[in-house]
Amino acid sequence: MAHKTVEPVVWSFFSGAMGLDLGLESAGWHPSLAVEIESIFCQTIRRNRPDIQVLHEDVAALSSDKLEALTGHRDVDLMVGGPPCQSFCPGGNRSALNDPSGNAIFEYLRLISEVRPKMFVLENVANLVTAAIKHRPIAERPGQSWNLSSYTAEAATLFDLTDDGLLPLTEDELSGSAIRYLLRTVIAELGYQVRFSVLDSADYGAPQRRLRFVMIGALDTMPPGLIAPTHGVEEGQPFVTIRDAIGDLMDCPGPGSQYTAETRAFFDLVPQGGNWRNLPYEVAAKAMGEKSLKAGGGKTGFFRRLHWDRQSPTVTGKANRKGSAMCHPSESRPLSVHECARLQGFPDNWHITGSVAHQYTQIGNAVPVALGKAIGESLNQTAPESGKLDHAAMLDLATKRLRASARNHRTRTPSET
View: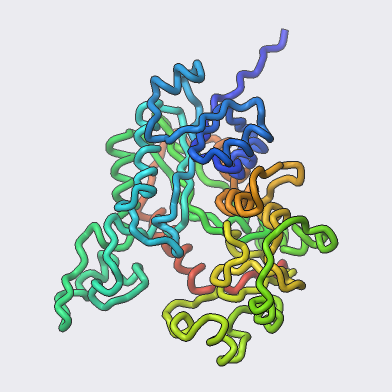
């Protein structure tokens, strides 16, 4: 008589529209519980996965005892979650762990410490590796650099008291202090062994360049390694392009936002793969405003038109914004809801509930399904029985990956390395 295979117990937190969970499912990790604070996201989960237990709940209000009473499970194989990350995002307020949404990470870690799953996944924005515990406004920083990478432990001696009297940054205000604190918390207090890295979803078959921080923790054993990229010239599989993902939707893109007539006229002047830099100066000044035009930073998202034969940048929850534009390669309009969902890897039969604005938000907040699958396949790997985990080297590699991406915003075509 054949033995029935026991499904691993998987709990998903901050589940959103379930992009990460769909990827995990394709690798054999099927969540039985989804926890989400936003009601519209809960509706999407229930619509598509009626067999999953959905808790419309704040993670801060949960405990291991409450979850056991609700689910009937005490032994959990995997907890997975991507806590809110606005305070670490380049476009956020950069308040890091001072922000209540930043502290959602610690609520998630607290719950892990109570439940004690065999493994956990912590997914977040790539900027987590350079974020500071405490935020100091740019105008109050010595040197007044907007780039936090200028303020590392190695560079701290360069910023003593300056002529303008600004105090040097404290250790908690330096780049990377947040991740170092997280590592101390996870390893010293939780007792988990962890591996982490910054991964690009395009390297795993997504038609989108989206860098994400991924940490895998294991209890009482070594954690499995994160799988190597599957797409790229060296990997033998070409990068997936925007044309591959949405080329068949030209005649039926579905609902979506539209630009005003004035904004559309600006986009008419931008070629494929271009942005505000393709506008004559006087036109760019009118489109963006003199202040924005002269501000620091690359501003690569302003009046950006996508390229058919490259990958998209990070899909956002506001496709019609001029500052983080997702303009169609051939038409002067934002990508539709359906097109954004395709770039994120959602199957066409995955129903996103709510208004068009709500749908954009849910899709933009999701983890690309292809990246979720890569994480799931990483969990399936056999972990080494012993060895040394060099977290300093992991952090150095992740930081270099993040900064290299920031220096090179040009997207890759299938034939490029």
